[in-house]
Length: 138
Image 1 (cartoon, rainbow, N blue to C red):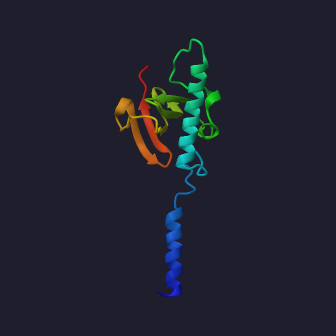
Image 2: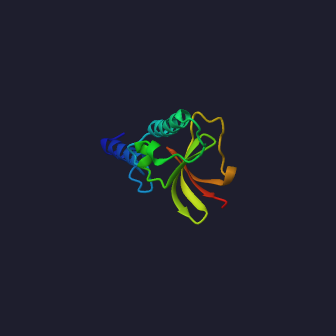
Image 3: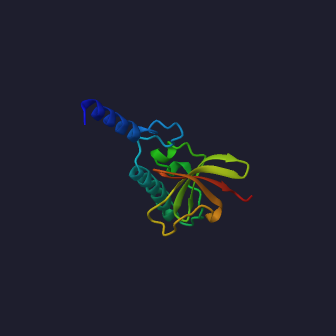
């Protein structure tokens, strides 16, 4: 292989491995890894559960108040964060009875979600979980 061909191969390899890194659709930012987001989701869930368990007469809600959201979760610019079968749902857009956002699979859940389960339609799998749309019954 000539030096010219080697340089071309290296350039094409670098281009193919970095393509999409500046994807403007990506939210949260690329600085987070899957482990960071999973840790952040677990931290959000854990802080909420710790507060819930410390209350004398707690009332359960799947909605997680803003004060328990970890920084990576807040960086997703959620309108709402809630638990669904121990998975974390980050709602980023609501239009009528359709919500959209990021569904983060939690390692503590024994439930594997599929598109169509409980109204969730997964539109894209990416390194943090799934982008989803869900019709909410009012």
